[in-house]
Length: 596
Image (cartoon, rainbow, N blue to C red; front, side, top):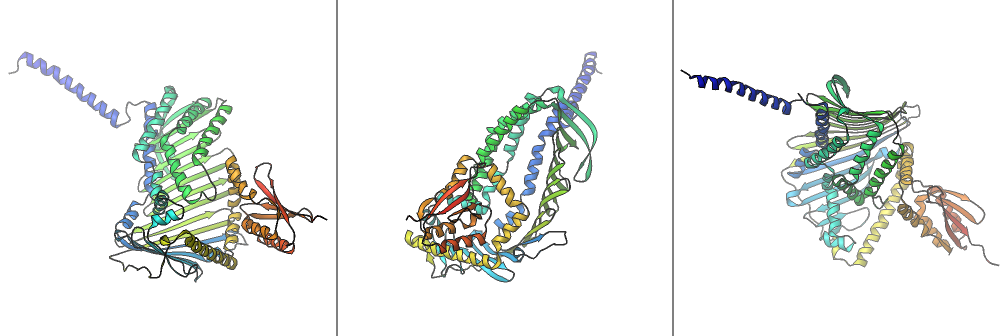
C-alpha cells in the first residue's frame, strides 16, 4: 500500500510530466510547423525558401546523367545542326527560299577517354555537296593530327601542345583555359553551390530584418493564385513599405552587392568565358559595368526618392513550399514563380505600366525541358524558345534540341540533333607518316605554314560566300529581326572612353598624306567590311561612311575602280567623328592636287 507521502509525489509528478509533454509538443509544433509563429518570421521563412527554388532551377539546367554516360563509356557520337528561316511569316509573301536553309553542319566523333583517344570529322554541307571539312585526331594527352584537305595538302601534327602554344605566343594557363572552355568545365563556376546560396540567403534576409519595422508584416490566408495555368491554395505573407522606406532598403542591398565576393566571383567567371571567345570582337569589363550599373541605380534612387506610394512584397506558401514571390509597385510588378512536382516550372514576369510584359520561363516535364523568353507590348510579341528532349538508354543516348525565334513576320528554327552509341571498343585511327610536325619547326617556317593556311581559308570562305552569299544572308536575317540595330545601340550606349579610343584607333592608324594608289587599295581591302556608304563631296573629295555592322559590296567595288582609274594620283586620308558618340563616322579621302 502506498504511503501518503508517495501518493502526494505521484500527484505532483503527473502534472509535471504532462506539462513537460505539452511544452515538448509546443516546441515541436513551433519548430516543425507554422503554429505560434509571427507573420514576420513566416515571411522570412518562406522568402528564404527561394534558395531551394534556385537550387532546383540549377538542377533542371544540369544534365548529370547524360554527362555520366560520356565520362564512363567508349562511344560514337553523331551531331547535326540545321536552320530554317521563314521571312514574312504568316503573310501572303511568306518566303523560305534562302541559302541558310540549305546548310547543314555535321560532326562525327569517336571517344575513348580511358585511352586518351578522340577523333572528330567536321563537315559543312550545302544541300548534299560537301563545302568544307576538318578532321582532328588525338591519341594521347597532347598529340594531335589536324587534316584540312580543302585548305592544306598535308596533315599537321602537334606532338607537344604546351611547346606549340608557347611558340605561338600563348602560355600554359591560356591552354588550360581553352581546354576548360572546350570541356565546359568553366561553366560550373557560374553555378551557386549550397554553401553560397545559404550565405546569400542569410546575408540579405538579415539585412532586411535590420531595416524593416515589425509592424509592416501581415498575413492573408486561403488565397487563390494561378501559376502556369494551374490554381493553387496558398497563404500570403506580406511586407508593406512606403516608397522611401523601400528605396532606402534597396540602396542598402545594392551597396552590399557591390562588395559581395560571391557575386563578384561569378562575374569574374563570366569575364573569363567572354575573354576566351569574344574579347577580340569587343573588349568588355563586366565587373566595371556591373559596378557602374549599381552606382547609377543608387544615384537615380537618391534623386527620385520621394513619394508615399505603398510597395508590397508578397510571399505565397502552399503546403510548406514557397510557390511565388511578388513585388508590387505603382510603376511595375515582378513575379517569381516556382512549382516542383512531376512537372517543374520556374518563371519570372515583369509587368510595366506601358502594357509591356516580359516573361522568362523554365519548365521540365518528363524528358522535355523548355526555356522561353517572351516580350509583349500591346499586340506585338517576340518569343525566343529552347526545347530539349533527352532519351537515355543502356547502350545509346539521344537529344533533340530546337531553338526558335518568332516575331510578327519572322520565324527561325535551329535544330541540333545529337546521337550517341555506346560501344565495347573502337578501332583507333593511326597518325599519317608524312605529317608536318609543327612544334619541331622554327618560327619562320611556322609563319609560312600559317600564311598558306590563312590565305587558303580566306580564298575558301570567299568562294563559299561568292557562291552562296552566306554572309549577306546572315546579315539580312539579323537586320530583319532587329538584331543589328540592337547590337549598335548596345555598343554605343555602353561604350566607355577607353573603348571609344580602341575603336577609333583601328581607323586613325590609316590616316596619312601623299599616299599611293597601292596604299589606298590596301586600306580599302582592310576596311571593306566596314564601308556602309559613299558620298562625293567634290571632284577631289570622297566621304566614306564607316559602320562595323554593315557592308556595301557594290560601293567597295566602285571605290576600288575609282582609285584604279586615278592610279597616278596621290591621296590624303583623314577622319570625321560623330558628335554625339565620339566614334569615327567618316573616312575622308582627298586627291592631292598637283603643283604647277
